[in-house]
Image: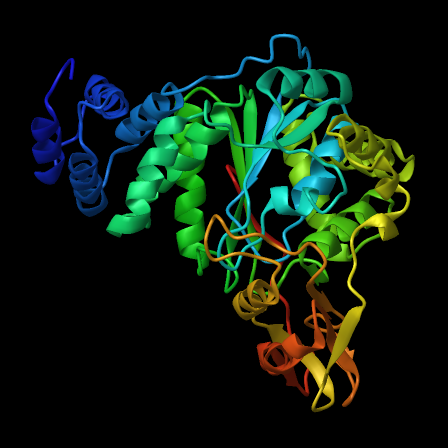
Length: 438
């Protein structure tokens, strides 16, 4: 290493001392060049997990991981470039409707997304439910689609922040995933490698989120905003509720259809509202407007006049997909096996366990427990009743979309158990809990 050898960097962090930016640069450069072994990086990661990192260190680590690969420039894209990142939730299909909506308002959205893993779904899996949609564009074609359409959603390439992929693989097997600075550096290095001017973060809180309580979500949101700004980007964050699934569908084709419904001017109220709330932040960061009220007006107009739906169709076509799904969501893959989950009592739905809903969707085949597992785009869960709504005994609480009715028995019991029904209408938490900075 150019400045320090691996053992010096490990012991310095082990002893609780802050590393200089040049040392963190040398750490990542040496690791990628093979001069620092995997076991040595694992030791350093554990020291960082135990001792923590300052914001200055986290900025330097983010920038070093960012520079470990190619940083896109999108030189031919003249519009301001703003992306959105969600920390993951159940039923979170917002990217599919948000990117074309914001593009229709004059902000370019070069979005690099991921696949579902565990109980949370992935944007790429939802897009691949559209026949022909290719998420593996070259960086040259990615830039062309952003320039010509205004938005493009692809998967991470091996050239973007490769240090993050290698380091995350080590964190995953060494018990160092739950480190705030390492989480922040991982998220921001991948996103900023896309050549962004700004980033809006959707940090979720609740049973279906990785951050189960609002205090943890707030700490993550503040860290992401602080470090992102320290790295030179415009960044803001919303803390949003994930105590219940978002929208009324969980499953790839089902969620894609719901996102299209929002672009058609319909869709569940919470899916539409979160799309608009995040869109406001993206337009504000992009300098398209100065007030939330003006941003909301532009976004609603783009939904009402069909321009957001038209952008979605153009994006799908540019990726080789069947653009007819924009007008005809019935072209998405479907299963004929649809089974109701009936209520055992009358009353009001007081809560739905989002984590359990996500887990069942994985069992049905809509998600994966390992990165190499395939998903079935047809299967999933439709929530007939949401918290606050009245249900009568025997009415459907939800519908299961199954590969085979043989899959029904256990899933029916688990979904019914995920619902809580009481005699009083519950007081629901706000969908958007907080904006950082205020």
